[in-house]
Image (tube, rainbow, N blue to C red):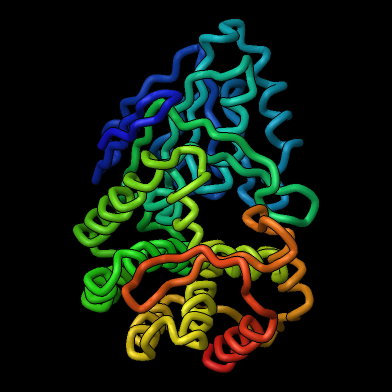
Amino acid sequence: MIIKSSTKDYAVSLYNCFDNIKNYEIDENTFVVIDKVLYELYKNELFLKIPEKQLYILEAVEDNKRVETALEICEIMTNIPAKRNVKLVSFGGGIVQDVTGFVANILYRGIHWSFYPTTLLAACDSCIGGKTSLNYKKFKNLLGTFYPPDEINIYTPFFKTLSERDFQSGLGEVVKFNVMFGGEGIQKMESNIDALLKREDDKLEQFVESSLLFKKDFIEADEFDRGVRIHLNFAHTFGHAFETVSHYAIPHGTAVAMGTIVANRISLQRGWLAEDKVVRVENVLWKIIHIDTDSFQVDLNEMIDAIHKDKKQVGKELTAVLMKDDMKLQIVHDVKRDEIEKAITFLFQNL
């Protein structure tokens, strides 16, 4: 799959075994960043050849998705003599992608970058599109750039060692894309969600590829997120708020799944979506949303404040992407507090 970009076109390749990684040679001009958990899991199998001075192990937590982490990696990489010919290779999920993509963009005004998404969430969504986003203070993704990798290599065996929490988080984005696709997408999710939960190889490959193909049309039509691509933020206004008020205890894809329920319930309140479609989507989502509701109680004032701080807001009114009964998406700027309260109340009563 080739993704077209004004910066550079880049290839996305899918593999079902690790042979290419095992045989990959790290030259003296290459620096590698690897998610800490991933490194511990695969150190002996995949990463023993990497010289220690050319390796940075990143603890992939939200507190490290910030400018200071990116600058620390930049500082280390300035010791590589090659300068503009230096290459950055990163293995991990969305946090690793955001930090290393930011580094690749700002170091020497842009260096060669290869990304290996190792979570389902990154593989089916964030790896394409060129966005790099860093958190600022307590708010998510306020800083960022557009800088795509030169190549993306997806190895589906990595998904087998994901925790159930992280795997189900990835499914949150998979379901979101299929809901956006409309009735056919909803039916596909109803038919395949159980096989996906079992991590069946053919289903994982099928849905990763179909999710990327769906997103590809949006990002190629609107690379810099000023028009039709904003529709991909369906469910994210509320999802990012859930992440923020939970102090990121709720992972991104799970928060998006929760945000999908909130968005659809608001559409239902407005008479924009038929209840049967809303319930069908929810019946899929209940299978992948698992949070400890005893330790997390949502505060509506905090939710509204987080939504106002979301970078997609354009004024004092609350902006969100909602769905209508023909499954078309619409950007609205008049979401009311009581609509959000009713939808969130329904969500938590049914978790």
